[in-house]
Image 1 (cartoon, one colour):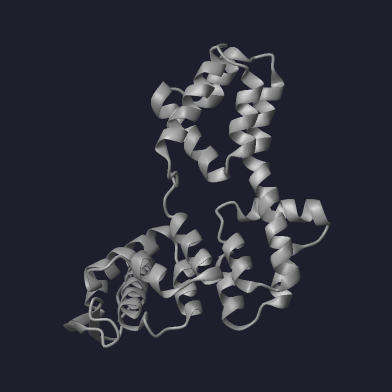
Image 2 (tube, one colour):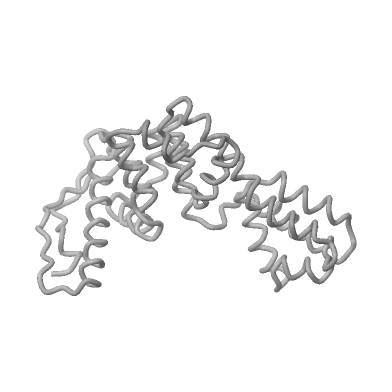
Length: 269
């Protein structure tokens, strides 16, 4: 038996509440781990989770609680979540994000979309702005523009997502990394190199720490999960400690119970 045999599709019918969404009925076949090496067990467990979560979303999404969806989104690795989303599309012929955007609003939807956005390393909506930033940086590195103003404008004003995207795009367009280009032009200007490090890595972390502080004070669990779901979670917690001299994680765990606590704990596994 392999992981894909854990479930057998019986038939596909239209969901009673929304005929546009296919409803997949399934039969569960108990898992068997006998005679599998540790690596095989891990792989089969991953396949089992893939099947369970994708079928749960296909069968129960319209009627399930938002925390169940958030648990699936935040409780799985990026790789596994991509597989779950792909499997959902196969089962329902509908994009998961399309269904979620119709079903949820407010803080719940912001939490959901934050996790889905994190699956894409390039998360840049406006490619023109990204390329323009790269052009200005290249010009600054060659001495054609006011270097410090350009660097501070791009990396202080922009979001962390956009800044990271610019760094990747710069290397694609110029066939060298931005830090190499900076050192070629500004080998004596430590301010520029320092600004890249500080502004890109810390500015957004401090902003997120402020958001986290307000969410903790107001005990807004969904907002807390949205911030903690960030890829730079430990840097945000460090910024929080620096700014407020308090242990954010300790405060969060004290105020979280039930499924909220389960989701938050899964972010640190």
